[in-house]
Image (tube, rainbow, N blue to C red):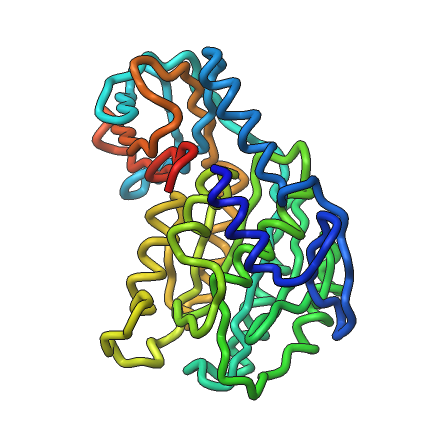
Length: 321
């Protein structure tokens, strides 16, 4: 874990005093965070796990076909942690409000019209449920906050109109994801539903954060990532020392329990994503038995009910990457 914290500090450059930075409307906003970029918080959770505390898995339930009613119980589930079957203590729906960071790639090389990006903002703003709040962040070389968390649809739509393309050749996807986690979602204390909706093709150039570290941090903080996927600007070309865009998208959604949609289907994506956040989000609670919390552990959650499909994060990162 401490190796992860050190890399996060390095990625934020010369900032001092436990402070991190997102750009707000073109000017710098400094946000005070816990020392070591909030990593001690993750450490406390893992220490509690070693002491036998219960663990909560956030689970999205997808009914198959035309089924509307969802009956999810412990008897319908099998849970394996590091290959060891676990006893589930409780299964409960979570109807609380969501905190959503809409993170948009505005680089010139993205193969999407600016109008498509603006439309995605409008679609999510229009479909927010009562109590939900969304934050709007644009990124290229560095992330810029266009609107803080709000449930005001008008403010979000107006912020979307301020989107503009950047001319930089640097497209720092992984740095933007880490900054969104550190400076926005970690501050939403008390909210179980913390979500990133990424509008991108998965392309990255010159991020300081390594993908595997960001993916582990997202899993550690139980952040769900959805992707509105633009057409791959690399046309599938193999890249040196970094992931192909399509592979990056796959790892983000599979690793966190999210889902990918084509950017052209933004209207449908917004409706379905916000509906499942509101009505199909469950918590599965268990005490890990027979596992070492210091190690990375794969999670496997199965439904014995053939009418249901389940999505949750792929692993507990533990204290090592």
